[in-house]
Image 1 (cartoon, one colour):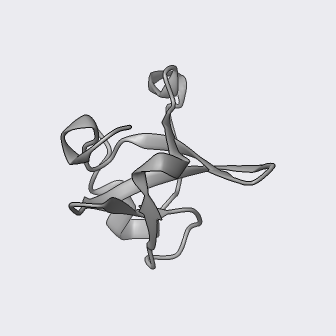
Image 2 (cartoon, rainbow, N blue to C red; image 1 turned 90 degrees about the horizontal axis):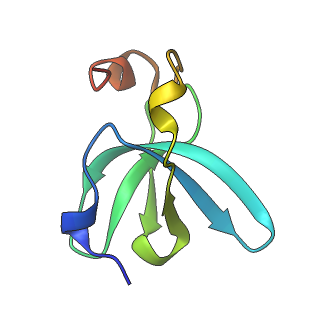
Amino acid sequence: MSNSKDWKPGELIVYQNGDRFEIGKIKRITEDGAFVWYHEGETAAKTPFDCMHKLVNGYVIEQESLGGEEGRRYDS
């Protein structure tokens, strides 16, 4: 089981919701989950840590638009 120390803002994740999977970008960490962007809009959805999986090869994604303009501030 992961906790808030395992994640950081701007990190790309894979969200598992039953048999569906979505790529997201962490906006903000909380004690029991994270607010994650799943689309180009600036609204983030609260996501529990147990549904989040690290995207190990996320570094190969050079450009994405998750979170719109606000999300681009997290790009390195």
